[in-house]
Length: 149
Image (cartoon, rainbow, N blue to C red; front, top):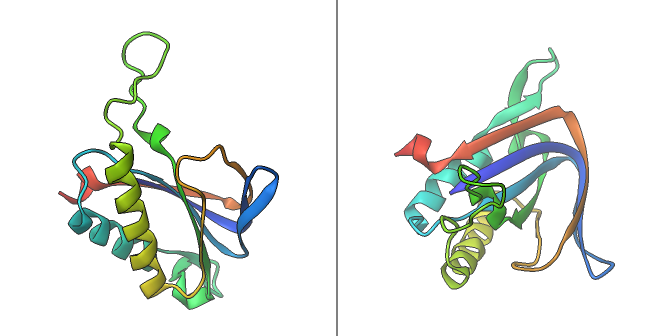
């Protein structure tokens, strides 16, 4: 499982010219799910996400978590995080999770995130989405479940 976490001042996701999710200060999280991922892995990733201290405190140090700043989450599935570009110029997505399993885990991630964050917006699994954001910093972190094994 991979999370690309972007600290944002605001972000939104649009499908068919309709905004389906929008947040203010918080994290835009792009989520990639592989065939090997489980709910246990998701639990570890969500815990790390919710407790990351990457917002600035009064001294300008990245010392505050999402909860400390009343931050919001916009969580968007993105299978292309598992693109394999080692051979040729056309990416392979064989390492991305099968759609049915990936959707189930994505919904699980949303449910668990809502247990720890009052505002959780989402994209539409499998849809052609347009994302707008104002990255704060810019500040982007990549969490990969292989780092938590």
